[in-house]
Image 1: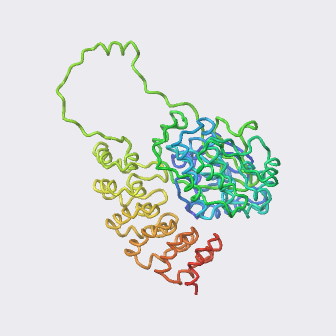
Image 2 (image 1 turned 45 degrees about the vertical axis):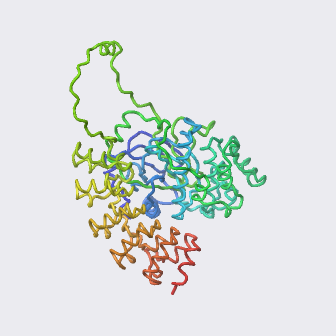
Length: 572
């Protein structure tokens, strides 16, 4: 838990306000020189500062375990005498999805599909971790680099008023399921988010905001009493309309999972996005290129709510700070929003161009063709599995280019190659700089962590052949590569690691005291649970974490009846 506490000396909070609301204010800041968003909370009258800080820290720790490219990430918790309690978050500078739709809609098919896929995958990840968002909407989905959407503002602390209903707390009624109008906040399930997902998908595909122009009482009457669902654009292909409509089942249990919705959409492999990128000023762009990004993580609260930028329209050209509902406090959308366009490359004056066109061209003998570097960005080259460009960039820039860090969790090119599973690129980098095996991200996790988490079997085998000791490495949260593979259900990756590390891997725990079986059970990974129990037997079911919970307890906590049935024959 100590790893989440940020020393106030390392954090600089500027006066630049990104947004405000009932919770307090969000300002731009710097954490050890890196741009961040800092959410500063008003004091909670029910708790003294020390108690509030410890309660926040206790709830933040498990949330910081989340790692997904479509989830806004948490950096840590800080407190000082001047600002009080602060949450330090990833800074997403592309604005919200609401702003993007207002500015660039209707979306071209490739971007529409890209956005739908990312939202479904991010939401499914949250649900796999047993997390219910409770306020999913375009204002709470942010744009990062390369049109990457990131879900923000999902539920954490719901404070003392634990039976407060969504109607009372002023939730976003436009995206609220029928059960949300009269159900206690704690009783909402992941299926509530699926109703909201349907509304968002409708907007992405050219539709209007659900029940646009109607207030909460009117929407409640339409949904609860009249059994109306949000309008779905009539021009959409039948399979897309069916996918969206399936989200609006009035019986929560009949709604599909986010993964099933994605399957119904039948999205083909995605091309490179074609629309304009969110505007940002030149200074900000330069700062982002120069800064060494930090690892990141998400958070949400119950002490207040943010407000809309204008009462007349739900969407403005200014990026909102994420809009949260009523008394439950949420991580606002930490965006700076669109500003001016990037400066264009300067051109010679017109009179000079005229002179230049009249100059006699002196022909020189042709030289031998030089190798062409397709990608000038090492990270782009790695991501596209372009071994030749990686090789040429190293030759051009030197080995120091392999120590550069950028993007999610401040990865190096080698860590990114491991995440992508590009073994050829990994070999090129390792050949030039063998000590890349020692590199870790800002979570303290190495290349094997990344390859294991994303199920990159070939990369895992290659890394183990280079250095088998990587298997015992622990990040700042105590996770081993084996634990991460189990939590993501990658049985094919677990097998070579178990062959290398043996039975000790089964009882290793992270800082929460969770074993690989805890993680697999809590995330509903049935194949991984079966394999772990086959290796370790029923004794694994008796291991308690720091809260005294066993893997069996996790099946109850996270409502995983199928996992419980797999465990039952091993129960002693």
